[in-house]
Image 1 (cartoon, one colour):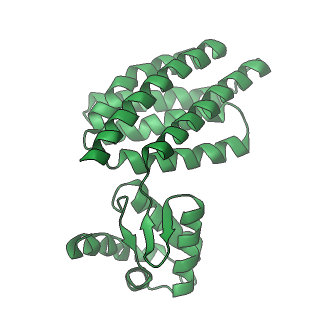
Image 2 (image 1 turned 135 degrees about the vertical axis):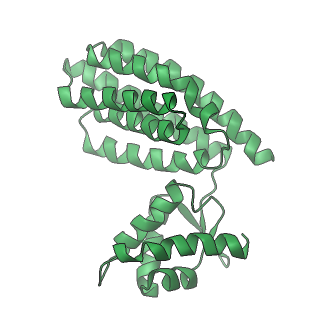
Length: 238
């Protein structure tokens, strides 16, 4: 990473210093870093040094170390012995595993909701709202916004299981997948094909056609996985 690139992300962190209250915890520091990882400010492969973080945020080394341990537990950074801490860079195997896990969680959530025989109206509404947000973002040409809405659709689908552990796992999966999406240059190509499919899925959920939705989602996600793996594989070759 160049000196100017390092200056960019540390400057951005320093500008957010006010969000850390006196006596701030490692959780708050981890939250700031996590945001920068997920929005692409801190890109995969960037090294995070204690010295830079202490200076940018005005916190102790112990706080920084605890924050980095939190991010490591979330699989967003990785420790390399004798080298330091780096924003995690996924390989194709990592990405394939994440896609498979996402498919199992979401399709399983729909089947669980179908087995119960009902869907909470608020949970169904969250799926519909996220799909509509994506539709509006796409119409405005806001493909980053469409990507955010797409993630919200998938989180809302998993939430249909009404299982806090599934929700937690799904949030982790979505965060890790961001490590792949932030390095893909063409956001439109990655999100446009799925805007209408999200709307159709939301309609099936709203109408209570949950097993049908599970089948549609399984097919959709398998195609999306192939698309993502191909695009990401090309970035690894460049």
